[in-house]
Amino acid sequence: MRDFSADHRWLSINTATVRAQWPLDRIVDECARRGIRAISPWRDQVAAVGLQAVARQIRDLGLALSGYCRGGMFPASTREARQLALEDNRRAVDEAKTLDAPCLVLVVGGLPGALAGRPEHKDIAAARQEVRDGIAATLAYAQDVGMPLAIEPLHPMYAADRACVNTLEQALDLCDALDPSRSGALGVAVDLYHVWWDPKLQQQIARAGRERLLAFHVCDWLVPTRDLLNDRGMMGDGVIDIPRIRGWVEDAGFAGYSEVEIFSSENWWKRDGGEVLATCIERHRCAV
Ligand code: ZN
Image 1 (spheres, rainbow, N blue to C red):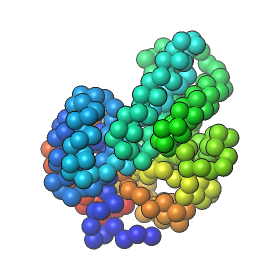
Image 2 (cartoon, rainbow, N blue to C red):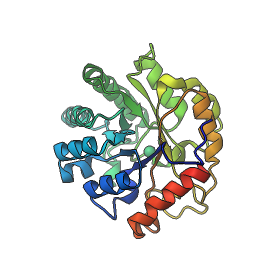
Image 3 (spheres, rainbow, N blue to C red):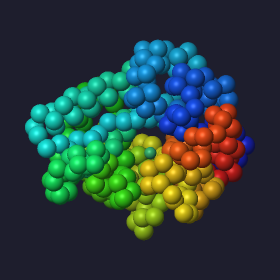
Image 4 (spheres, helix red, strand yellow):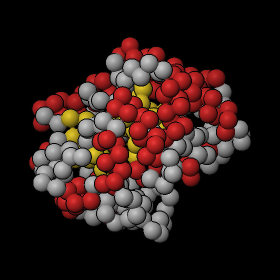
């Protein structure tokens, strides 16, 4: 297992972590200034600054991406809406390519309408079939472009509104069905916030292997957790044994960045951005 204690060369910052403090161009500068070599930006942050401007800035500063957030949200109750989702996913693939991302992260979606508080039906099996169809269609396009897709299983508490793919096993079953040759075009994003509790985690990480492990997201699970979406903890402040799981991921062949992704409306989003990045660097060395 790699030793992270001496430097932060394998630290990436998911730019949602300081999204409340700074626009993306500032985040990129602040990360580069601190020797942070990689980021993972969100589409809305990129759009706010401009895709070409962000691509140029990242290139000029010599930064890398550890992923691009995000595609997905496939299920919909009409054919037209499903078609619009596929078109949007193709745009996300193109943006990821322009930014030279190593993968496009997919948050696959749940019951249509649920995210807006108005679920249109109760058929989660149908939603899962639409997810499978949506990934298959997007994969065909992404393979042409040369952009790997990383399915991110989300904690089951989000099954209704954000993602009905909820375990690493389920995500890997999709990968095996849609990319049986393990070509590298389809894999998973392992976000510890979503999967740390899973009794099959170690086994499924080993199953994933190097070809499927496309991204590794870290934060911590706070006790108590006060908000299901925006109360993620800083590494070391909660109950996830992060180094142990990183060991499993590296044993399986992953050698990429540990991407810090913290949504924290009551704590980290209220602090000075420089303090947040300094804490990420420090905890990356001692708690990741
Ligand atoms: Zn994540």
